[in-house]
Length: 253
Image (cartoon, rainbow, N blue to C red):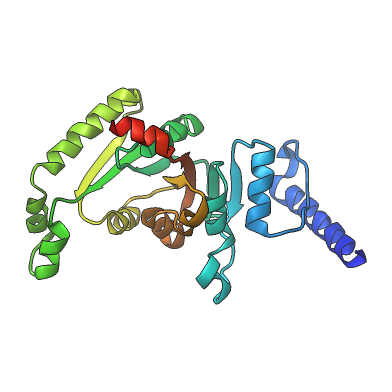
Protein backbone atom coordinates (compact mmCIF):
# COMPACT_ATOMS: atom_id res chain seq x y z
CA UNK A 1 0.00 0.00 0.00
CA UNK A 2 2.80 2.46 0.82
CA UNK A 3 4.29 1.91 -2.66
CA UNK A 4 0.94 2.71 -4.28
CA UNK A 5 0.50 5.83 -2.12
CA UNK A 6 3.99 7.05 -2.98
CA UNK A 7 3.36 6.52 -6.70
CA UNK A 8 0.01 8.32 -6.44
CA UNK A 9 1.60 11.36 -4.73
CA UNK A 10 4.43 11.49 -7.26
CA UNK A 11 2.01 11.26 -10.18
CA UNK A 12 -0.26 13.97 -8.80
CA UNK A 13 2.74 16.27 -8.30
CA UNK A 14 3.90 15.65 -11.89
CA UNK A 15 0.43 16.42 -13.23
CA UNK A 16 0.19 19.66 -11.24
CA UNK A 17 3.53 20.77 -12.64
CA UNK A 18 2.40 19.83 -16.14
CA UNK A 19 -0.82 21.84 -15.88
CA UNK A 20 1.05 24.97 -14.76
CA UNK A 21 3.74 24.47 -17.41
CA UNK A 22 1.42 24.05 -20.38
CA UNK A 23 -1.50 26.28 -19.44
CA UNK A 24 0.12 29.00 -17.32
CA UNK A 25 -2.30 31.74 -16.33
CA UNK A 26 -5.02 30.38 -18.62
CA UNK A 27 -5.60 27.34 -16.44
CA UNK A 28 -9.31 26.39 -16.41
CA UNK A 29 -10.94 24.73 -13.45
CA UNK A 30 -9.75 21.15 -13.22
CA UNK A 31 -9.54 18.15 -10.97
CA UNK A 32 -6.85 15.51 -10.87
CA UNK A 33 -8.03 11.98 -10.25
CA UNK A 34 -5.70 9.00 -10.14
CA UNK A 35 -7.25 5.56 -10.45
CA UNK A 36 -5.52 2.18 -10.57
CA UNK A 37 -6.51 -0.52 -13.05
CA UNK A 38 -6.30 -1.36 -16.72
CA UNK A 39 -5.88 2.04 -18.46
CA UNK A 40 -8.35 1.61 -21.32
CA UNK A 41 -11.06 -0.09 -19.28
CA UNK A 42 -10.71 2.35 -16.37
CA UNK A 43 -10.80 5.45 -18.59
CA UNK A 44 -13.87 4.12 -20.40
CA UNK A 45 -15.63 3.36 -17.12
CA UNK A 46 -14.83 6.81 -15.69
CA UNK A 47 -15.97 8.56 -18.88
CA UNK A 48 -19.29 6.70 -18.87
CA UNK A 49 -19.83 7.15 -15.12
CA UNK A 50 -19.32 10.91 -15.39
CA UNK A 51 -21.16 11.22 -18.73
CA UNK A 52 -18.34 13.32 -20.16
CA UNK A 53 -18.76 15.15 -23.46
CA UNK A 54 -15.27 14.38 -24.73
CA UNK A 55 -12.26 12.22 -23.87
CA UNK A 56 -8.89 13.74 -24.84
CA UNK A 57 -5.84 11.52 -25.05
CA UNK A 58 -2.39 11.41 -26.62
CA UNK A 59 -1.18 8.58 -28.80
CA UNK A 60 0.32 6.11 -26.34
CA UNK A 61 3.62 4.40 -26.94
CA UNK A 62 3.45 0.98 -28.52
CA UNK A 63 4.61 -2.21 -26.83
CA UNK A 64 5.97 -4.52 -29.55
CA UNK A 65 4.59 -7.82 -28.27
CA UNK A 66 1.55 -6.95 -26.16
CA UNK A 67 0.06 -4.50 -28.68
CA UNK A 68 0.26 -7.16 -31.37
CA UNK A 69 -2.50 -9.05 -29.55
CA UNK A 70 -4.53 -6.44 -27.67
CA UNK A 71 -3.73 -3.13 -29.40
CA UNK A 72 -2.57 0.15 -27.89
CA UNK A 73 -4.40 1.81 -25.03
CA UNK A 74 -6.02 4.25 -27.48
CA UNK A 75 -7.16 1.49 -29.85
CA UNK A 76 -8.67 -0.47 -26.98
CA UNK A 77 -10.30 2.67 -25.59
CA UNK A 78 -11.97 3.26 -28.95
CA UNK A 79 -13.56 -0.17 -28.71
CA UNK A 80 -14.72 0.22 -25.12
CA UNK A 81 -16.12 3.72 -24.72
CA UNK A 82 -19.27 5.28 -26.16
CA UNK A 83 -17.89 8.81 -25.74
CA UNK A 84 -16.27 10.94 -28.45
CA UNK A 85 -12.47 10.73 -28.27
CA UNK A 86 -9.96 13.32 -29.44
CA UNK A 87 -6.56 11.70 -30.09
CA UNK A 88 -3.84 14.35 -30.06
CA UNK A 89 -0.82 13.56 -32.24
CA UNK A 90 0.51 17.08 -32.82
CA UNK A 91 1.63 18.69 -29.54
CA UNK A 92 1.98 22.12 -31.21
CA UNK A 93 -1.46 22.19 -32.82
CA UNK A 94 -3.14 25.58 -33.04
CA UNK A 95 -6.96 25.83 -33.09
CA UNK A 96 -8.32 23.53 -35.79
CA UNK A 97 -8.82 25.22 -39.14
CA UNK A 98 -8.90 22.43 -41.73
CA UNK A 99 -11.00 19.33 -40.95
CA UNK A 100 -11.23 16.21 -43.12
CA UNK A 101 -14.36 14.08 -42.73
CA UNK A 102 -14.54 10.78 -44.66
CA UNK A 103 -18.18 10.19 -45.64
CA UNK A 104 -19.92 6.91 -46.55
CA UNK A 105 -23.51 8.26 -46.35
CA UNK A 106 -24.40 5.99 -43.44
CA UNK A 107 -26.27 7.17 -40.33
CA UNK A 108 -22.99 6.85 -38.43
CA UNK A 109 -21.22 9.10 -40.91
CA UNK A 110 -24.01 11.67 -40.69
CA UNK A 111 -23.78 11.63 -36.88
CA UNK A 112 -20.03 12.28 -37.09
CA UNK A 113 -20.59 15.28 -39.36
CA UNK A 114 -23.24 16.69 -37.01
CA UNK A 115 -20.88 16.36 -34.05
CA UNK A 116 -17.99 17.95 -35.97
CA UNK A 117 -20.04 20.97 -37.05
CA UNK A 118 -21.11 21.60 -33.45
CA UNK A 119 -17.67 20.91 -31.97
CA UNK A 120 -15.89 23.09 -34.58
CA UNK A 121 -18.30 25.86 -35.60
CA UNK A 122 -15.67 27.93 -37.46
CA UNK A 123 -13.40 25.30 -39.03
CA UNK A 124 -13.22 24.65 -42.77
CA UNK A 125 -14.85 21.29 -43.52
CA UNK A 126 -13.61 18.93 -46.21
CA UNK A 127 -16.04 16.10 -47.00
CA UNK A 128 -14.35 13.11 -48.64
CA UNK A 129 -15.99 10.05 -50.23
CA UNK A 130 -14.39 6.99 -51.83
CA UNK A 131 -16.44 4.59 -53.94
CA UNK A 132 -16.04 1.36 -55.86
CA UNK A 133 -18.08 -0.34 -58.54
CA UNK A 134 -19.18 -3.95 -58.79
CA UNK A 135 -16.31 -6.31 -59.68
CA UNK A 136 -13.81 -3.44 -59.58
CA UNK A 137 -11.41 -5.21 -57.23
CA UNK A 138 -11.69 -8.36 -59.31
CA UNK A 139 -10.84 -6.52 -62.53
CA UNK A 140 -7.92 -4.72 -60.91
CA UNK A 141 -6.55 -8.03 -59.66
CA UNK A 142 -6.59 -9.51 -63.17
CA UNK A 143 -4.29 -6.88 -64.59
CA UNK A 144 -1.97 -4.25 -63.20
CA UNK A 145 -1.94 -2.37 -66.49
CA UNK A 146 -5.18 -0.46 -65.86
CA UNK A 147 -4.76 3.19 -64.89
CA UNK A 148 -6.88 4.66 -62.10
CA UNK A 149 -9.07 6.35 -64.70
CA UNK A 150 -9.59 3.07 -66.56
CA UNK A 151 -10.45 1.20 -63.39
CA UNK A 152 -12.91 3.94 -62.49
CA UNK A 153 -14.93 3.12 -65.61
CA UNK A 154 -15.94 -0.17 -64.02
CA UNK A 155 -17.73 1.82 -61.34
CA UNK A 156 -20.30 2.86 -63.90
CA UNK A 157 -22.74 5.54 -62.68
CA UNK A 158 -21.76 5.17 -59.02
CA UNK A 159 -19.60 8.29 -59.15
CA UNK A 160 -22.52 10.44 -60.31
CA UNK A 161 -24.76 8.87 -57.69
CA UNK A 162 -22.18 9.74 -55.04
CA UNK A 163 -22.18 13.39 -56.16
CA UNK A 164 -25.96 13.52 -55.91
CA UNK A 165 -25.90 11.85 -52.50
CA UNK A 166 -23.31 14.36 -51.28
CA UNK A 167 -25.46 17.27 -52.44
CA UNK A 168 -28.49 15.83 -50.62
CA UNK A 169 -26.39 15.31 -47.48
CA UNK A 170 -25.20 18.92 -47.49
CA UNK A 171 -28.78 20.13 -47.93
CA UNK A 172 -30.10 17.84 -45.19
CA UNK A 173 -27.47 18.98 -42.69
CA UNK A 174 -27.76 22.60 -43.82
CA UNK A 175 -24.05 22.90 -44.46
CA UNK A 176 -24.38 25.25 -47.40
CA UNK A 177 -23.43 28.28 -45.33
CA UNK A 178 -20.26 26.54 -44.18
CA UNK A 179 -19.18 26.08 -47.81
CA UNK A 180 -17.55 22.67 -47.31
CA UNK A 181 -15.05 21.48 -49.90
CA UNK A 182 -15.92 18.14 -51.49
CA UNK A 183 -13.72 15.38 -52.89
CA UNK A 184 -15.13 12.22 -54.46
CA UNK A 185 -12.66 9.61 -55.72
CA UNK A 186 -12.76 6.08 -57.00
CA UNK A 187 -10.72 3.46 -55.17
CA UNK A 188 -9.93 1.93 -51.79
CA UNK A 189 -11.12 4.15 -48.93
CA UNK A 190 -8.14 3.59 -46.60
CA UNK A 191 -5.56 4.25 -49.32
CA UNK A 192 -7.38 7.33 -50.63
CA UNK A 193 -7.77 8.87 -47.17
CA UNK A 194 -4.06 8.35 -46.57
CA UNK A 195 -3.33 9.92 -49.95
CA UNK A 196 -5.61 12.87 -49.24
CA UNK A 197 -3.88 13.56 -45.92
CA UNK A 198 -0.55 13.69 -47.75
CA UNK A 199 -1.93 16.14 -50.33
CA UNK A 200 -3.88 18.50 -48.09
CA UNK A 201 -2.96 20.50 -45.00
CA UNK A 202 -5.27 18.84 -42.51
CA UNK A 203 -5.40 19.70 -38.81
CA UNK A 204 -7.99 17.14 -37.78
CA UNK A 205 -9.60 14.00 -39.18
CA UNK A 206 -13.12 13.16 -37.99
CA UNK A 207 -14.12 9.49 -38.12
CA UNK A 208 -17.10 7.53 -36.90
CA UNK A 209 -16.86 4.08 -35.38
CA UNK A 210 -19.60 1.77 -34.17
CA UNK A 211 -19.88 1.20 -30.42
CA UNK A 212 -19.83 -2.57 -30.32
CA UNK A 213 -20.01 -5.23 -27.67
CA UNK A 214 -18.72 -8.77 -27.35
CA UNK A 215 -16.51 -10.29 -30.03
CA UNK A 216 -17.04 -7.35 -32.38
CA UNK A 217 -14.72 -5.32 -30.13
CA UNK A 218 -11.89 -6.96 -32.08
CA UNK A 219 -12.29 -4.39 -34.90
CA UNK A 220 -12.92 -0.64 -34.92
CA UNK A 221 -13.04 -0.30 -38.69
CA UNK A 222 -10.20 -0.55 -41.19
CA UNK A 223 -10.27 3.10 -42.28
CA UNK A 224 -10.25 4.44 -38.72
CA UNK A 225 -7.43 2.08 -37.76
CA UNK A 226 -5.38 3.14 -40.79
CA UNK A 227 -5.78 6.84 -40.02
CA UNK A 228 -5.01 6.30 -36.34
CA UNK A 229 -1.83 4.36 -37.06
CA UNK A 230 -0.47 6.48 -39.93
CA UNK A 231 -1.77 10.02 -39.59
CA UNK A 232 0.41 12.71 -38.04
CA UNK A 233 -2.55 15.01 -37.44
CA UNK A 234 -5.09 14.84 -34.63
CA UNK A 235 -8.12 12.57 -34.90
CA UNK A 236 -11.63 12.91 -33.51
CA UNK A 237 -13.51 9.61 -33.25
CA UNK A 238 -17.28 9.70 -32.75
CA UNK A 239 -18.76 6.38 -31.57
CA UNK A 240 -22.19 5.65 -32.99
CA UNK A 241 -24.29 2.85 -31.44
CA UNK A 242 -25.21 0.09 -33.83
CA UNK A 243 -28.95 -0.49 -34.25
CA UNK A 244 -30.35 -3.38 -32.29
CA UNK A 245 -31.42 -6.53 -34.14
CA UNK A 246 -35.08 -5.77 -33.49
CA UNK A 247 -34.88 -2.25 -34.96
CA UNK A 248 -32.87 -3.48 -37.93
CA UNK A 249 -35.46 -6.21 -38.49
CA UNK A 250 -38.26 -3.64 -38.43
CA UNK A 251 -36.40 -1.51 -40.99
CA UNK A 252 -36.06 -4.48 -43.30
CA UNK A 253 -39.73 -5.41 -43.02
